[in-house]
Length: 396
Ligand code: AMP
Image 1 (spheres, helix red, strand yellow):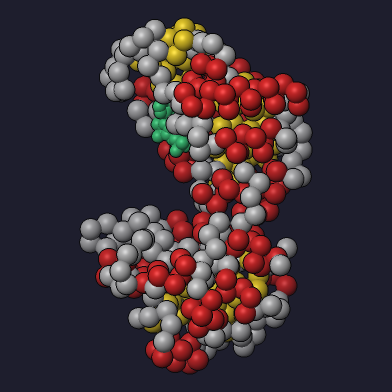
Image 2 (image 1 turned 135 degrees about the vertical axis):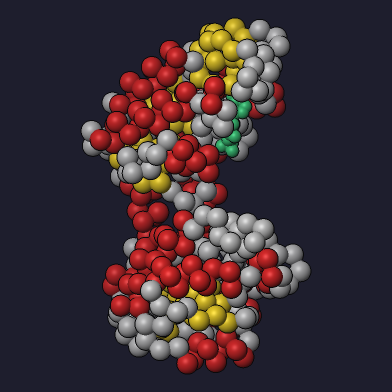
């Protein structure tokens, strides 16, 4: 893998695509700086090696050019504090000021460019725009895994201007290493746990994972499409009727490949979509009309716990129930704790995708799993088996 570990940066201008797409409140204060923190080791390594570091990122979804609420100026103070140095700022990511500031930047200094998405050329993957960015530096580093699935100017197109000087930063490198460790080099038994609301967003993942895993656990709202496909009564639970045939095909594929497919035998059902609804635990294929399944049941939890604790490689995406409501969070908590216990016994566990990451954080288990992916959409596309443009552009 082409990483920043094997390059002589002394005296070089290094352009780093980072992901500083952080949430800001109404006072334009950062409410969660995880993404900034994640990039610090890459930036510090480059500075220590004698590079002048130029950072570029997007922030939010500006529609028509510059807008203060999307300005990267709002991250300068936080970033300067973390790096222990005053970060310079250019009001525009291209143009005379950016060129002058980049040219004057000395070894160990850091310059942050204004939001790339103030130019529609960024998301359009415009080559001329990418060329202008590339002219600021000698070396290109991509450390924005969260946008690696986009063929944007700064994430993919720009790499062609650095044929011998393009590489992954530590965020990208670690994400790729962890996901590859699971998908390509995972020790058996390999268990994938998929949850979340719908089958529709996950069907390609299911199909790709069935070729790789020993056990596939399905929970969350998506379980009911599978249960209905097997002829069960799911009451008012979330079901995608147009995907019943797809769910049946996945079950047949699992059977023919010898993959153990676990669909919850019981569910916590409720008489409305509300934390204070009446609730009870029932076989998941006998849910009466007027009731809906909002979590996996106690027996399913116990079955899943055993499978997870006997696994050597674990991939988890998506909650087991409506875990935002405390009365329907038990299944998700049980799975998270089982993954933590398996990890303590030596398994490699990767948690990815917004809501399972939120669950792991909510239960303070982020340090008890092997790796928490920050990639969201990029990670999901990678486990679907797709080539990520941001990765391919460096590897080509
Ligand atoms: P996704 O974005 O597809 O991963 O879905 C995450 C969402 O699925 C969370 O907000 C959960 O509340 C929701 N979810 C999980 N289980 C269920 C369920 N049984 N019924 C409805 N929504 C669910």
